[in-house]
Length: 257
View 1 (cartoon, rainbow, N blue to C red):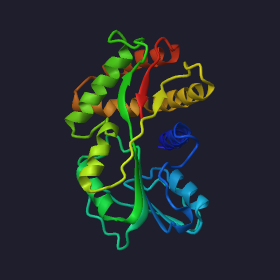
View 2: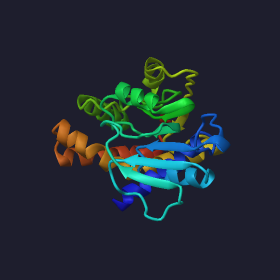
View 3: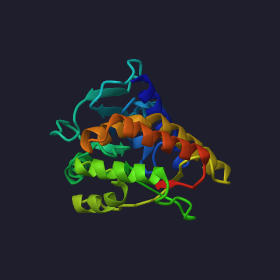
View 4: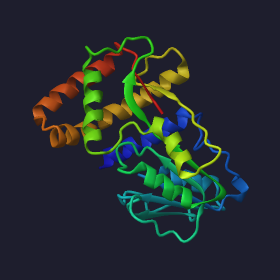
């Protein structure tokens, strides 16, 4: 559990780098910010940093797992709850933040409708999520690579369970369907590995590679063994090849946020 918490914090650091060393992109009115909700808060690191940035705001972090620290800013609190169950909040939020829920949500349109109904008029909601489909701009990643076999198999297994591993490209339409206005969609490329020439992208790729390698077994074993009925040994053999390929930087893999 400790290693997974460290990976989640590394993922937070990576995603803040991706969007320009920021906690969020929405044009929220900081001085008027009163209530903030962080969906799928994980270790609570985003909620804590928001609480420190906006000490006058109440920040609530929601997650299924009670892995958040006990010592937090006085304006930050956490609740253990299933965000796909009925919401019981009595007051709407100025800002609702939903990040890194890839493979976690069964019914995205219903969740987004609940977010819409719990956002104050004039408030903002922000979604940051992946399209986990690996690709390369230069054609260096091909079907001959075990890495592409791995990610394609993982995506298929997750979809078998009804948990979308690539929700990012679909969120714009879901938001519009729920009634959100002034919907803005941005795509950020994230390299897998430090192969880029640009120093910033190289650093991003290194961070992304580290958190990918740390989570490789956790991402894969449950889906490959539990859903696709692969043997444990076959999965580990594939993952060994994937690790070797990713570390070799023999291709320029990317996925999108």
